[in-house]
Image 1 (tube, rainbow, N blue to C red):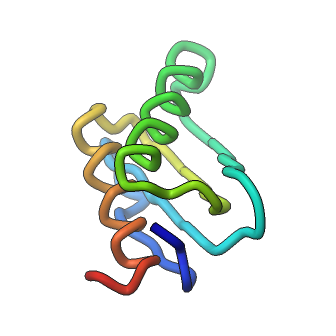
Image 2 (cartoon, rainbow, N blue to C red; image 1 turned 90 degrees about the vertical axis):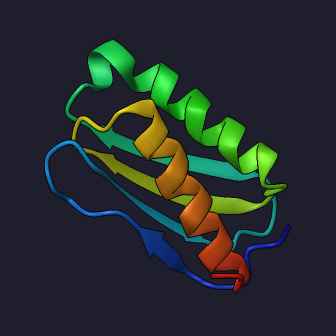
Image 3 (cartoon, helix red, strand yellow; image 1 turned 135 degrees about the vertical axis):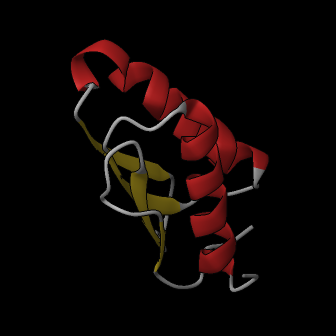
Length: 89
């Protein structure tokens, strides 16, 4: 899957996560800001990368602003942003 345009999903509300995705020439770049970064930053980034892999995204820049979201919410927001970035949603 190729990201063809900038897209976003989620909100900046408490217990949610805001995800922006945009095209990139090579590789994945994940920028993470989280209120629980010290405790769960690595796990959040691994989740983001796994969802992108599952969606077939190999080249993209992703910005994630987490406000304490559960893993299922993170997965849903990343998948939605990826689908929108492909022009499928």
